[in-house]
Amino acid sequence: MKLNLPLLAALAVTFVGSTGLTQAQETPVSETKPVKIVMETNKGSIEIELDAAKAPGSVANFVKYVKKGHYDGLIFHRVIPEFMIQGGGFSADMKQKETEAPIQNEAKNGLKNVRGSLAMARTPNPHSASSQFFINLKDNSFLDYPGQDGWGYCVFGKVTKGMEVVDQIAAVPTTVKAGMRDVPAEPVTIISAKVSE
Image 1 (tube, helix red, strand yellow):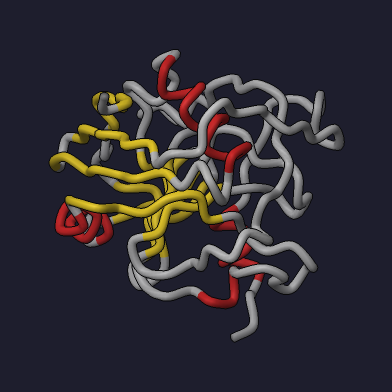
Image 2: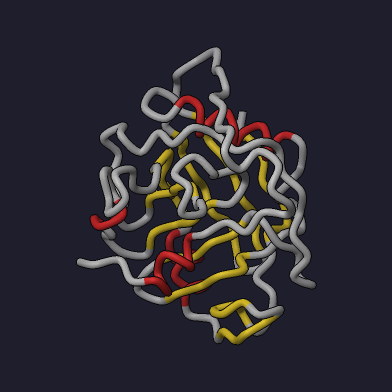
């Protein structure tokens, strides 16, 4: 399957400014056991298991954002049925939240963009992922390493409970807001995201 420009745009992260776009960095992790995240949304609860063994940098990065409350109050700002739902970057008024430096792409880890998998969103720069993520609504093998750009999109976890909530989000009506397509007409909000101890 060829990745056309609208789909590529659907996964792109729009950064505020240009600082750090070309300087990817790896985030060290101290343990490799699976990490569980509970994401409460205004549509219901989504439970996620992160694979710290296969995607240590991506998991450490995501957990860092979770622990500092970055996702709380943000929205799923891009919803494309039969493809994916994306969040982690914008508030309901379409203001982009500032992020830390982007991370190294770990797509060559053997994890696949299958239904229910959690992956890092990025720009066409392979090493530009920061806080934005997406959940695959179906098997999207064309996003797997090496993809069409030699890198693909890094999967670092999977939904273990609440796919019915993900599907409910995927079914909401969308519109154009702030020049962006596929934005839910009524905000789909991440109320909170927490590490489940």
